Length: 447
Image (cartoon, rainbow, N blue to C red; front, side):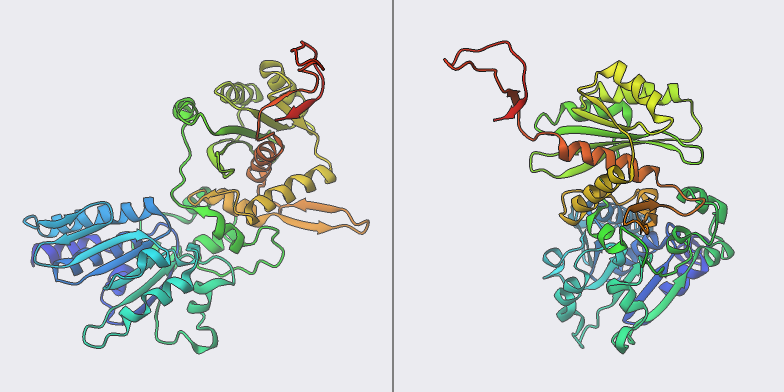
């Protein structure tokens, strides 16, 4: 057996081999998260390049596309140590005397103009998928050199291009060969994981949970009751965003003197955890979560110490949910940081309505980006439901056994960022009538 054949036999799982050995021009894969399909695509692109085939991959963001290309490079050099590259940069590899691999964030402008086999990863999470398909369409119609189109994704609700393609809406997608690999099949065929590990990753306890069904069971979940629909979440997700560790947060803030930073804290309840979010407001007004801390069972004193340390790094305004147990927590934070920088909100139906509507508006207006890899945040946002009582009040809730602490912590931070002034303020009576400065206080006034 050749070295390559032995590597192939030992390295890949049966569901990956079935995909590789398909001869179809059009393929679509409905898959569980983190079971090795992006890695498998890198293998197929590398092998194709060594055989003289060109290919292009469109990913959800720059980081994902660069990670994929780095894996392609490793596969090529492993399969053919003597391989040399005529082009070798962050977006393209051209093997001397063979094929080219391009890996870029998926959008119509980056995809247009390239020819070759096309791979679109996490299609349900890519914006403008239909426009991308139209942009690459001409390169797929050549009969002299047939090109392949491969779509892979976890599902995201019963809407969008990926749902239409998978379900063959109106019979328009019958040319696709379909592959479904949920976590149960992956584990059965040797993938080293467990259902319990997947549940723990999501922070849920039941396999019937909507998050597990979506992320690991390949189910397109109906979302009629969700206040934050998947389509909205997907439009605002950015897979290039990564949280900054606490040890690096001070330096991160210091290197962005033109940005302003805010934080929101939701103290632990009886069943929920506690969460802190830090949000950056850029000079352009974009809101970007840059730090997240989650506690499960830690003492309030430990939480308060952490929150105070973060605020002192350069937070302009911090908001704590001071309802119930939060009252004492807020007092401790306010004592350490002062009432100007650390404020509290007592949650009533009206206050919660204002916070959530403000959060949704920031998403709808594309003023807030969501880290694409924060599965738990996406799950909690989609799991939040709004009910209208007989008296006309709006109430927000999550199902038993689920959490919404991330939602409220983020809502607090976003409210701080959108309610704080965007320009410097001076006291109303800072200048006297004659133009001389006074030392008096008074209401604030924006320049």
